[in-house]
Image (cartoon, rainbow, N blue to C red; front, side, top):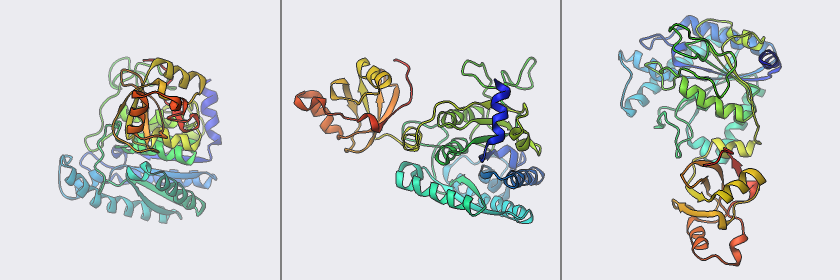
Length: 373
Protein backbone atom coordinates (compact mmCIF):
# COMPACT_ATOMS: atom_id res chain seq x y z
CA UNK A 1 0.00 0.00 0.00
CA UNK A 2 2.86 2.38 0.87
CA UNK A 3 4.52 1.66 -2.50
CA UNK A 4 1.25 2.33 -4.33
CA UNK A 5 0.83 5.71 -2.64
CA UNK A 6 4.41 6.70 -3.40
CA UNK A 7 4.19 5.60 -7.03
CA UNK A 8 1.12 7.78 -7.44
CA UNK A 9 3.26 10.87 -6.76
CA UNK A 10 4.71 10.54 -10.27
CA UNK A 11 1.43 11.93 -11.56
CA UNK A 12 1.64 15.13 -9.50
CA UNK A 13 1.30 18.07 -11.90
CA UNK A 14 1.16 20.91 -9.36
CA UNK A 15 3.74 20.73 -6.57
CA UNK A 16 4.25 23.05 -3.59
CA UNK A 17 7.70 22.89 -1.98
CA UNK A 18 8.31 24.44 1.42
CA UNK A 19 11.92 24.92 2.47
CA UNK A 20 12.86 25.49 6.11
CA UNK A 21 15.23 28.00 7.66
CA UNK A 22 17.79 25.29 8.47
CA UNK A 23 18.00 24.38 4.78
CA UNK A 24 18.57 27.84 3.30
CA UNK A 25 20.85 29.19 6.04
CA UNK A 26 23.79 28.15 8.17
CA UNK A 27 23.96 28.05 11.99
CA UNK A 28 24.72 31.80 12.22
CA UNK A 29 22.03 32.83 9.75
CA UNK A 30 24.32 33.05 6.71
CA UNK A 31 23.15 31.92 3.27
CA UNK A 32 23.72 28.23 2.50
CA UNK A 33 24.69 28.86 -1.11
CA UNK A 34 25.33 25.24 -2.08
CA UNK A 35 22.01 23.96 -0.76
CA UNK A 36 20.08 26.84 -2.29
CA UNK A 37 21.77 26.19 -5.64
CA UNK A 38 20.79 22.52 -5.53
CA UNK A 39 17.23 23.51 -4.61
CA UNK A 40 16.92 25.89 -7.56
CA UNK A 41 18.22 23.19 -9.92
CA UNK A 42 15.73 20.68 -8.52
CA UNK A 43 12.84 23.11 -8.94
CA UNK A 44 13.88 23.81 -12.54
CA UNK A 45 14.02 20.07 -13.21
CA UNK A 46 10.44 19.68 -11.99
CA UNK A 47 9.34 22.52 -14.27
CA UNK A 48 11.16 21.05 -17.25
CA UNK A 49 9.26 17.84 -16.57
CA UNK A 50 6.01 19.72 -17.21
CA UNK A 51 5.05 20.32 -13.58
CA UNK A 52 3.81 23.57 -12.04
CA UNK A 53 5.93 24.46 -9.03
CA UNK A 54 5.50 26.91 -6.15
CA UNK A 55 8.09 27.57 -3.44
CA UNK A 56 7.27 28.62 0.13
CA UNK A 57 10.51 29.79 1.72
CA UNK A 58 11.53 30.50 5.29
CA UNK A 59 14.83 32.06 6.30
CA UNK A 60 14.33 35.82 5.96
CA UNK A 61 14.48 36.59 9.69
CA UNK A 62 17.65 34.54 10.24
CA UNK A 63 19.38 35.99 7.21
CA UNK A 64 18.51 39.54 8.25
CA UNK A 65 19.85 38.96 11.73
CA UNK A 66 23.04 37.52 10.27
CA UNK A 67 23.52 40.62 8.12
CA UNK A 68 23.17 42.77 11.21
CA UNK A 69 25.84 40.70 12.95
CA UNK A 70 23.45 39.29 15.54
CA UNK A 71 24.43 35.86 16.85
CA UNK A 72 21.11 34.99 18.50
CA UNK A 73 17.54 35.05 17.17
CA UNK A 74 15.71 38.34 17.86
CA UNK A 75 13.10 38.13 20.60
CA UNK A 76 11.07 41.30 20.10
CA UNK A 77 8.45 41.32 17.35
CA UNK A 78 9.71 44.64 15.98
CA UNK A 79 13.24 43.20 15.72
CA UNK A 80 11.93 40.15 13.87
CA UNK A 81 10.10 42.45 11.49
CA UNK A 82 13.23 44.51 10.86
CA UNK A 83 15.31 41.38 10.28
CA UNK A 84 12.67 40.03 7.90
CA UNK A 85 12.77 43.23 5.84
CA UNK A 86 16.55 42.93 5.49
CA UNK A 87 16.58 39.17 4.95
CA UNK A 88 13.85 39.14 2.31
CA UNK A 89 15.99 41.34 0.06
CA UNK A 90 18.98 39.01 0.39
CA UNK A 91 16.97 35.84 -0.05
CA UNK A 92 14.95 36.98 -3.06
CA UNK A 93 17.99 38.53 -4.73
CA UNK A 94 19.78 35.20 -4.52
CA UNK A 95 16.77 33.18 -5.68
CA UNK A 96 16.21 35.53 -8.61
CA UNK A 97 19.86 35.53 -9.64
CA UNK A 98 20.19 31.75 -9.48
CA UNK A 99 16.94 31.14 -11.32
CA UNK A 100 17.92 33.66 -13.96
CA UNK A 101 21.10 31.72 -14.64
CA UNK A 102 18.95 28.62 -15.04
CA UNK A 103 16.61 30.36 -17.48
CA UNK A 104 13.73 30.72 -15.02
CA UNK A 105 11.81 33.72 -13.70
CA UNK A 106 10.71 34.29 -10.11
CA UNK A 107 8.01 36.36 -8.42
CA UNK A 108 7.85 37.27 -4.75
CA UNK A 109 4.48 36.87 -3.02
CA UNK A 110 4.26 38.08 0.59
CA UNK A 111 1.12 37.08 2.49
CA UNK A 112 -0.42 38.02 5.81
CA UNK A 113 -3.21 36.48 7.85
CA UNK A 114 -5.69 39.04 6.48
CA UNK A 115 -5.16 37.63 2.98
CA UNK A 116 -6.84 34.45 4.23
CA UNK A 117 -9.44 35.87 6.63
CA UNK A 118 -11.19 37.89 3.93
CA UNK A 119 -12.52 35.51 1.32
CA UNK A 120 -12.29 37.96 -1.58
CA UNK A 121 -8.62 38.60 -0.82
CA UNK A 122 -8.12 34.84 -0.53
CA UNK A 123 -9.61 34.41 -4.00
CA UNK A 124 -7.46 37.24 -5.32
CA UNK A 125 -4.32 35.51 -4.02
CA UNK A 126 -5.40 32.31 -5.75
CA UNK A 127 -5.97 34.17 -9.02
CA UNK A 128 -2.56 35.85 -8.86
CA UNK A 129 -0.76 32.57 -8.18
CA UNK A 130 -2.67 30.84 -10.99
CA UNK A 131 -1.67 33.60 -13.40
CA UNK A 132 2.01 33.42 -12.41
CA UNK A 133 1.98 29.67 -13.03
CA UNK A 134 0.33 30.18 -16.40
CA UNK A 135 3.10 32.65 -17.29
CA UNK A 136 5.76 30.08 -16.45
CA UNK A 137 6.96 32.04 -13.41
CA UNK A 138 8.02 30.42 -10.11
CA UNK A 139 6.04 32.04 -7.25
CA UNK A 140 8.20 32.32 -4.11
CA UNK A 141 5.89 32.77 -1.13
CA UNK A 142 6.57 33.83 2.43
CA UNK A 143 4.67 35.18 5.38
CA UNK A 144 5.11 38.95 5.40
CA UNK A 145 6.98 39.15 8.70
CA UNK A 146 7.59 42.87 8.20
CA UNK A 147 3.95 43.57 9.05
CA UNK A 148 2.67 40.32 10.56
CA UNK A 149 2.69 39.75 14.31
CA UNK A 150 1.23 36.22 14.29
CA UNK A 151 2.68 33.86 16.87
CA UNK A 152 3.63 30.23 16.19
CA UNK A 153 0.57 28.78 17.95
CA UNK A 154 -2.45 28.65 15.68
CA UNK A 155 -5.43 29.19 17.91
CA UNK A 156 -9.04 30.22 17.48
CA UNK A 157 -8.11 33.75 16.38
CA UNK A 158 -5.18 32.89 14.11
CA UNK A 159 -4.92 31.33 10.67
CA UNK A 160 -1.20 30.80 10.45
CA UNK A 161 1.95 31.72 12.30
CA UNK A 162 4.54 29.65 10.46
CA UNK A 163 5.41 28.87 6.86
CA UNK A 164 4.59 25.17 7.26
CA UNK A 165 0.92 25.95 7.73
CA UNK A 166 1.11 28.68 5.10
CA UNK A 167 2.37 26.12 2.58
CA UNK A 168 -0.53 23.83 3.47
CA UNK A 169 -3.05 26.63 2.97
CA UNK A 170 -1.51 27.50 -0.39
CA UNK A 171 -1.61 23.82 -1.39
CA UNK A 172 -5.26 23.58 -0.41
CA UNK A 173 -6.25 26.81 -2.11
CA UNK A 174 -4.60 25.85 -5.42
CA UNK A 175 -5.59 22.19 -5.37
CA UNK A 176 -1.95 21.04 -5.35
CA UNK A 177 -1.22 17.40 -6.11
CA UNK A 178 1.71 17.24 -3.69
CA UNK A 179 3.23 19.24 -0.82
CA UNK A 180 6.88 18.58 0.06
CA UNK A 181 8.23 19.98 3.34
CA UNK A 182 12.02 20.11 3.16
CA UNK A 183 13.77 20.25 6.51
CA UNK A 184 17.06 19.34 8.19
CA UNK A 185 16.03 15.74 8.98
CA UNK A 186 15.05 12.98 6.58
CA UNK A 187 11.52 12.46 7.84
CA UNK A 188 9.53 11.81 10.99
CA UNK A 189 11.11 9.52 13.57
CA UNK A 190 9.82 7.31 16.37
CA UNK A 191 12.44 8.83 18.72
CA UNK A 192 15.22 11.43 18.54
CA UNK A 193 17.04 10.46 15.31
CA UNK A 194 20.43 10.02 16.99
CA UNK A 195 19.11 7.81 19.79
CA UNK A 196 19.42 3.99 19.74
CA UNK A 197 16.50 2.26 18.06
CA UNK A 198 15.12 5.41 16.43
CA UNK A 199 13.41 4.59 13.15
CA UNK A 200 12.24 6.75 10.31
CA UNK A 201 8.52 6.39 9.67
CA UNK A 202 8.04 5.74 5.96
CA UNK A 203 4.27 6.18 5.97
CA UNK A 204 2.64 8.11 8.77
CA UNK A 205 -0.35 6.68 10.62
CA UNK A 206 -2.30 8.55 13.33
CA UNK A 207 -1.41 5.92 15.95
CA UNK A 208 2.35 6.28 15.41
CA UNK A 209 4.54 7.17 18.38
CA UNK A 210 6.77 9.96 17.15
CA UNK A 211 9.42 12.40 18.28
CA UNK A 212 8.46 16.01 17.73
CA UNK A 213 11.89 17.48 18.35
CA UNK A 214 12.56 21.20 18.46
CA UNK A 215 12.62 23.90 15.83
CA UNK A 216 15.92 25.33 14.69
CA UNK A 217 17.28 28.29 16.62
CA UNK A 218 16.33 30.65 13.79
CA UNK A 219 13.07 29.04 12.70
CA UNK A 220 9.60 29.03 14.28
CA UNK A 221 8.39 25.61 13.30
CA UNK A 222 9.80 22.25 14.27
CA UNK A 223 8.31 18.85 13.60
CA UNK A 224 5.15 19.54 15.60
CA UNK A 225 4.33 22.51 13.39
CA UNK A 226 4.97 20.40 10.29
CA UNK A 227 2.65 17.64 11.50
CA UNK A 228 -0.06 20.21 12.20
CA UNK A 229 0.37 21.59 8.68
CA UNK A 230 0.13 18.14 7.12
CA UNK A 231 -3.30 17.66 8.70
CA UNK A 232 -4.58 20.74 6.84
CA UNK A 233 -3.15 19.58 3.51
CA UNK A 234 -4.22 15.93 3.64
CA UNK A 235 -7.76 16.81 4.71
CA UNK A 236 -7.95 19.00 1.61
CA UNK A 237 -6.86 16.13 -0.63
CA UNK A 238 -3.12 16.92 -0.95
CA UNK A 239 -0.58 14.24 0.04
CA UNK A 240 2.47 15.46 1.95
CA UNK A 241 6.08 14.27 2.15
CA UNK A 242 8.45 15.49 4.87
CA UNK A 243 12.04 14.95 3.75
CA UNK A 244 15.56 16.32 4.09
CA UNK A 245 16.55 19.30 1.99
CA UNK A 246 20.21 19.14 3.00
CA UNK A 247 21.29 17.49 -0.28
CA UNK A 248 20.19 17.93 -3.88
CA UNK A 249 17.96 15.58 -5.82
CA UNK A 250 15.45 14.75 -3.09
CA UNK A 251 12.49 16.24 -5.00
CA UNK A 252 13.18 14.00 -7.98
CA UNK A 253 13.46 11.00 -5.67
CA UNK A 254 10.13 11.83 -4.04
CA UNK A 255 8.41 12.20 -7.43
CA UNK A 256 10.00 8.92 -8.57
CA UNK A 257 8.30 7.12 -5.68
CA UNK A 258 11.46 6.26 -3.78
CA UNK A 259 11.26 5.52 -0.06
CA UNK A 260 12.59 8.86 1.17
CA UNK A 261 11.18 10.92 4.01
CA UNK A 262 7.77 10.31 5.53
CA UNK A 263 4.65 10.31 3.38
CA UNK A 264 1.21 11.39 4.59
CA UNK A 265 -1.48 10.08 2.20
CA UNK A 266 -4.37 12.39 1.37
CA UNK A 267 -7.66 11.78 3.14
CA UNK A 268 -11.06 13.38 2.66
CA UNK A 269 -11.38 16.37 0.40
CA UNK A 270 -13.57 19.42 1.00
CA UNK A 271 -14.59 21.69 -1.85
CA UNK A 272 -12.65 24.96 -2.16
CA UNK A 273 -15.22 27.03 -0.27
CA UNK A 274 -15.30 24.62 2.64
CA UNK A 275 -11.50 24.37 2.66
CA UNK A 276 -11.36 28.12 3.20
CA UNK A 277 -14.02 27.93 5.89
CA UNK A 278 -12.30 25.08 7.74
CA UNK A 279 -8.70 26.23 7.68
CA UNK A 280 -8.40 29.87 6.62
CA UNK A 281 -10.87 31.66 8.87
CA UNK A 282 -10.79 33.02 12.42
CA UNK A 283 -14.23 32.54 14.03
CA UNK A 284 -15.86 35.63 15.50
CA UNK A 285 -17.72 33.66 18.17
CA UNK A 286 -18.67 30.23 19.46
CA UNK A 287 -21.94 28.33 19.61
CA UNK A 288 -22.11 25.70 22.35
CA UNK A 289 -24.48 22.92 21.31
CA UNK A 290 -25.96 19.84 22.95
CA UNK A 291 -25.13 16.28 21.99
CA UNK A 292 -28.28 15.89 19.90
CA UNK A 293 -27.27 18.82 17.72
CA UNK A 294 -23.73 17.45 17.39
CA UNK A 295 -25.04 14.08 16.18
CA UNK A 296 -27.46 15.74 13.75
CA UNK A 297 -24.65 17.77 12.21
CA UNK A 298 -21.99 15.05 12.05
CA UNK A 299 -24.16 12.02 11.28
CA UNK A 300 -27.14 13.37 9.31
CA UNK A 301 -25.67 16.40 7.53
CA UNK A 302 -28.37 18.54 9.16
CA UNK A 303 -28.58 22.30 9.63
CA UNK A 304 -27.98 23.80 13.07
CA UNK A 305 -31.25 24.80 14.74
CA UNK A 306 -31.74 27.03 17.78
CA UNK A 307 -33.14 24.10 19.78
CA UNK A 308 -29.68 22.54 19.81
CA UNK A 309 -27.79 25.66 20.95
CA UNK A 310 -27.09 25.96 24.67
CA UNK A 311 -25.00 29.12 24.80
CA UNK A 312 -23.40 31.83 22.66
CA UNK A 313 -19.92 33.19 23.31
CA UNK A 314 -18.69 36.37 21.68
CA UNK A 315 -20.33 39.25 19.85
CA UNK A 316 -20.86 38.92 16.10
CA UNK A 317 -23.16 40.02 13.32
CA UNK A 318 -25.21 37.91 10.94
CA UNK A 319 -23.00 36.39 8.27
CA UNK A 320 -19.99 35.94 10.56
CA UNK A 321 -17.98 32.74 10.69
CA UNK A 322 -18.48 30.98 14.04
CA UNK A 323 -17.20 27.85 15.76
CA UNK A 324 -19.66 25.12 16.68
CA UNK A 325 -18.53 23.45 19.89
CA UNK A 326 -19.51 20.67 22.26
CA UNK A 327 -20.43 21.45 25.86
CA UNK A 328 -16.77 21.17 26.92
CA UNK A 329 -15.70 23.78 24.37
CA UNK A 330 -14.22 21.46 21.73
CA UNK A 331 -14.74 22.81 18.21
CA UNK A 332 -16.09 20.16 15.82
CA UNK A 333 -17.63 22.34 13.08
CA UNK A 334 -17.48 25.82 11.62
CA UNK A 335 -19.96 27.79 9.57
CA UNK A 336 -21.57 31.07 8.57
CA UNK A 337 -24.21 32.16 11.08
CA UNK A 338 -27.42 33.51 9.55
CA UNK A 339 -28.16 35.44 12.75
CA UNK A 340 -26.22 37.74 15.06
CA UNK A 341 -25.15 36.71 18.56
CA UNK A 342 -27.96 38.82 20.09
CA UNK A 343 -30.60 37.25 17.83
CA UNK A 344 -29.46 33.74 18.74
CA UNK A 345 -29.49 34.58 22.46
CA UNK A 346 -33.05 35.86 22.14
CA UNK A 347 -34.17 32.73 20.30
CA UNK A 348 -32.61 30.53 22.99
CA UNK A 349 -34.31 32.51 25.75
CA UNK A 350 -37.70 32.74 24.03
CA UNK A 351 -38.37 29.74 21.80
CA UNK A 352 -41.24 30.21 19.39
CA UNK A 353 -42.41 29.40 15.92
CA UNK A 354 -39.12 30.65 14.45
CA UNK A 355 -37.17 28.03 16.36
CA UNK A 356 -36.99 25.75 13.32
CA UNK A 357 -35.31 28.42 11.17
CA UNK A 358 -31.67 27.33 10.82
CA UNK A 359 -28.94 29.31 12.54
CA UNK A 360 -26.42 27.73 10.18
CA UNK A 361 -27.68 26.06 7.02
CA UNK A 362 -26.14 22.68 6.24
CA UNK A 363 -24.69 24.03 2.98
CA UNK A 364 -22.78 26.70 4.95
CA UNK A 365 -21.12 24.49 7.53
CA UNK A 366 -18.04 22.24 7.50
CA UNK A 367 -17.44 19.36 9.91
CA UNK A 368 -13.94 19.39 11.41
CA UNK A 369 -14.25 16.33 13.64
CA UNK A 370 -16.82 13.55 14.02
CA UNK A 371 -15.65 12.56 17.50
CA UNK A 372 -17.95 13.06 20.47
CA UNK A 373 -17.21 15.18 23.51
